[in-house]
Image (tube, rainbow, N blue to C red; front, side, top):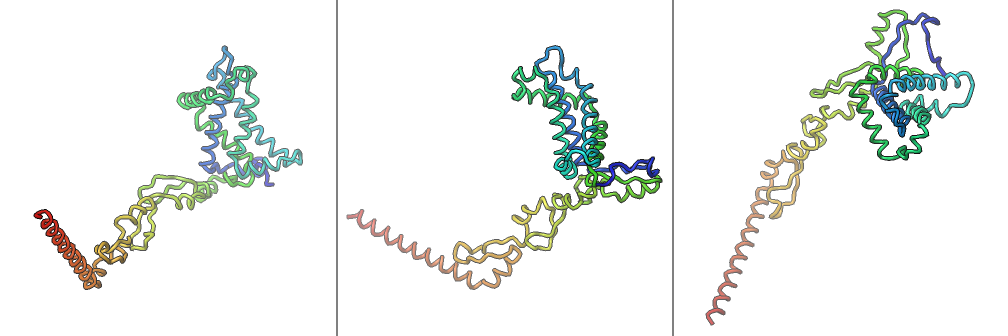
Length: 306
């Protein structure tokens, strides 16, 4: 395993690239807020002398310390040849949000007071609603600022992401070297270049976004000459695309040919005589029907007169 830290004391590398996968860090910051709300609610449920708000500040400090300490200890124990944490380390290095969720479960479990069990609210819908409401209150009151949670999430990620999959571990001895690196770092933020799209993402997710961006212009799926936005492709192909298959205007009277819309004039010109024959047949059938109706009408009139 790579060294967990390249300290400035060791190599004089004082300038750290602090870029990371913003999607992962954001997910981790939300998990931390939910953890604070859950632990605060569970630790005070059934206690009339305490409320979640009254313990939240102290709980936040304890939670941050626990998360950082547990993640760092796990990695260090593995590096020192201690307990076998291979499964946890695999999850930590490949699925950091799941790993953090596991640590949160440990912390929350340790904060469940006896009164919360006795109250019967522990696994109830009431508990979940209380957690949700308190989480919203924490966000509204900015009790744990997002920047502060982000810093905690980044510290945890730095501990567990030894392979640098989700954060940049690079350090430099000069600021100009750091600046040069930052401009090319795979975790730098890019804006989508597709007209109309306002999405931003890490450079490592460029292809992922490009594969789903609704504003990306694509060649028409029906091979017309136009380029159409991904989000408009189905509508284009089903309505205005010149290559949309359409039935001949004379379909109901015999011509069952289907062709691209753009070929309508050519088709009608090529099969003019055939279409005229279909029309004549229809007119003839209609004439025969009229004669037949006339004969039946005359027959009825004769019967009525008798």
